[in-house]
Length: 313
Image (tube, rainbow, N blue to C red; front, side, top):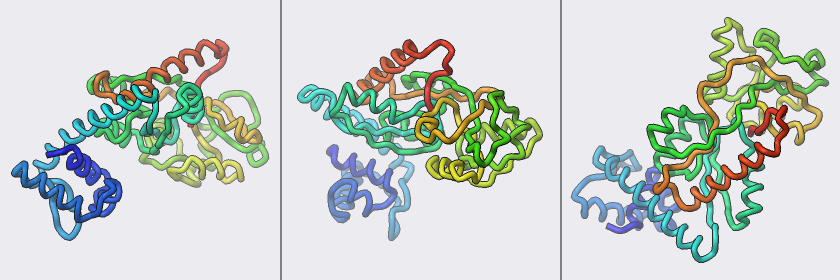
């Protein structure tokens, strides 16, 4: 058994396809298949269900895969540690983020890149539940999203909470002049508005749906999508209004849009930046996490006491 075989196994889990796993492993498909068959022969176990295509892992394969993830994560962490000892903090950090959260990821990355310019980032947009799975399986190094803090404690993750900036309605005043006011909006005031929202599978959408349902109010959803970019364009042209976590950078990016606070109970999950526990987190993830804590602390001290603080993406 060697580390490459375990890497191939993890790549197969991620890609769910022999050809794509081979591409991700920078080998030919016959080579990948042969190396995985050699691993099965050495272990004396059938790890992979094979038909004409990849058909999942056997029960024994799932057990071996869990160990493979741990070993590959430690191996990659060792490589990054050696690189950081030779060249400083350098490498590619894998970040999983939910579409709407209480932080502007680019703003955070810009601040950290000023300190560690050799860091690169690969960002995957995931649902809140997918993000927790990705952290558990080590397919991302850092998670930024909504979590149940009790779950994070049980799994021994390191977590840095993000500011709760409330919820607001984003709209274009040219198309919705009746919304021009500074008073917070109630759920009943926006129930009749055409809304552009994330898909119902997203935690933030489920949170919104739940409160409208409890209030006995209908939601007029004219457009739903996983793409924040498409939602923003829909608001820009007046197709509808967007309900979003407050404190985002959109006012600076689209100054013609306006927002109003929404009177709604806080989310039960908490926004946080999360990595594995000390000793299991990669050195790169730990460097990033420590820098995030420092940056958030400085941001908090520099923010006026009256400001809501934070950002959301």
